[in-house]
Image (cartoon, rainbow, N blue to C red; front, side):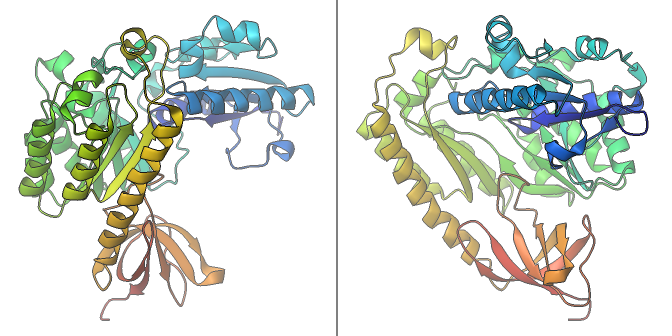
Length: 443
């Protein structure tokens, strides 16, 4: 306790959507008089009274990471480093009965939608006037904007609909109010997220209205970049491409997990699109938005993926040359359609071999793309400064924070402040990151 105020820390596991939930919670706690301890502070010396773990329960690795974080927090509680420990989020939503029995040292488990019960447990009265306000845990110049909750898709491998429920859009006016407040606090880059951003509006307005929302966001004073993540390929709303091509505030960047290219695998995944439709979609992106940077995710080892299907995937990646690509191996998740109806038939060793081969192909594509940018002048948002080393780091509109690379820039005479936009000439590249030099006006 500092100055008579209890100190709270929220540790966020998993995705950016969880981070938004944590930030809404922290705003309520800060308004109620709690002192917020940043995640990066050493827990042993930070003087934290209450520790909250916001968990991820999506896939095996994420679940194990969340459980490990809880166990480490339990140890900290036993040693008197923290007084109370609460757990919230997807893992405790998914295992709401098992976790309390397995880890009784936790003072309370709360699900993915349990903000008010958690506040009640902390003797905090929820303030409805703060519904669209957040205590940012990202650097102050960028923020995620979660536009909906849940998902109406039922992909074979995905546990999210069972955890987060059906798709539920946040009303447009609330999102505009939240975005305006973020801009007023100094946010310059909005990163639009959801389980499925392209489904936005259908439940509220009877049609997909993501394009309209993005158009309204571009009108907000102070916002310079708007970036779109987590699109879904089936029935992609084409008006989004029109706005991306016409607005200087829309980053020509799209995160759209395609997962695979082979018909048999896409059908087994229940993706509602086939291989030819996937190819036409990617081609439409390139045509409608010249210079667009595409980030995608692929899965290897899904039931039904034989060598022929894997070769199709490799050929697809080589042909369409995604600027950003991540991949993971299929893991059977209890409660999913795949676990109930498909046999996990690909050996783990073969999954890993395929994953390694795919990422080796992508490494060459990423390196080639980054090297093609050497000599170009690019607009960079400054993320952090190290003036003692004469460098700062930032990103162009082609890089999303946390998942993509960064630009390391040499500077003399002082570094620009985080959140500043500067011009940088790219001088070097590897498969992930770039280097450059600051270009002053008149250079």
